[in-house]
Image (cartoon, rainbow over all chains, first blue to last red; front, side, top):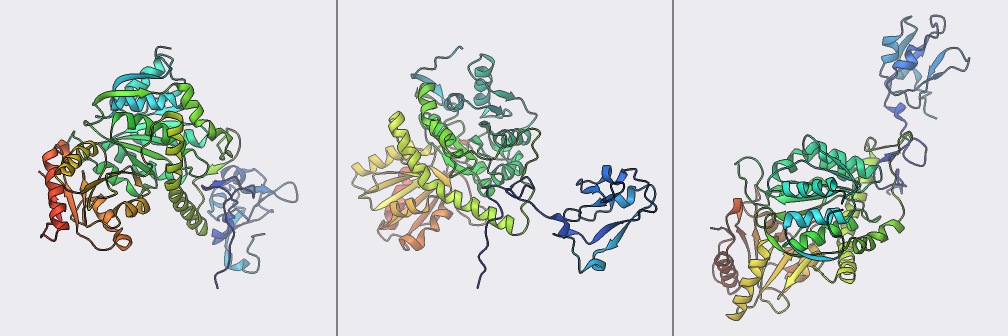
Length: 103
Length: 396
């Protein structure tokens, strides 16, 4: 029995604007490692925010530090590499098997 | 303004006919790089632009790859775009052609058929259009200067139709048509406006607008890719009835018809049929008439639509015939025959097994003469009467 599936695209071509009307691709499910932020080391300089190639670093809930939007973070590790304080480590996704980060 | 924009009849070359047609369709962007035998098309368009007859962005790119990317982007921004090329230029934009088709960007392109690289030949031949067969573009091929002009106008109507949204190539034989001067009726620009007016009433496509985050072409992994391929294939199939519809609209607007996907000539009561395309069709028509006078019941099928392949129309034209020949101006590596012949073979399950003959002629400006076509018809006629025949014949 083949499951009926709706179209991913409402358009004829692969138009996307992440709005939900056009294609919204949750690239977070490509990730094998995720950034973990150590707030004790972080001085909120914002390098991770600037360097993130897909702009998925967001303000942390505390309004001071930063966090990754795990729906989109592909786990590239650029933030961890550029962080001058060594406050970001890349942790294997398997450690978070019960929380895949996708809403 | 330096050119009359009323309906007029002029003696112009095939290249000028293409340029006039593009100008009359009011493209927003023209981007092209010169190459023999296409250069006159874009020289003429540059002149229209310089003289103020054509209000567009005329982008003088550094090569054909850029030309294709410019016109692709222009249509994605909602514009109407035109380019023209030939041979080396066509294959130099090969990767970009996949983008244009995959983005479903309705570019209209002239390809003036010329032999591609390998054996340097500044000569006619259809191998270039054959070589871009699977890029996902619609491909038309035409016979004379009037048909170049008319089909280029129809190409914009087809490409931008909301049911289609595909780029279209209009092919014509280099040298034989590019530099052939014929009497051509050039419609008034107001008539062309009216013909294309229907496009404005259709739903709009998404388009790129500066400052609005929107992308195309970057996301299609997994099932998304499959879905878009299926949509592209379905749009290709819709081209066939749409072209017939557009041809009927064209008759009403301009009084000329080309039969849509194929033109049949004296096929109805024919026992045997020759299938061919492009500039050779005129010669073939003359020889078919002469053979008819001799009592040979021969017909002619002119292929106008190469992609999608007009399998239904072709099958119906060939059904019940006793033998068929296909004249190719190019070769099909790996099948040891002509490419249009190879594709015609594929209609066999629809029409039954009959003798089919492949003729390869006209490579690199070798003339397809009346004598050659007469010999082809004699061979097909012999095969239809049970005489032994050679499947593939190279002429001369």
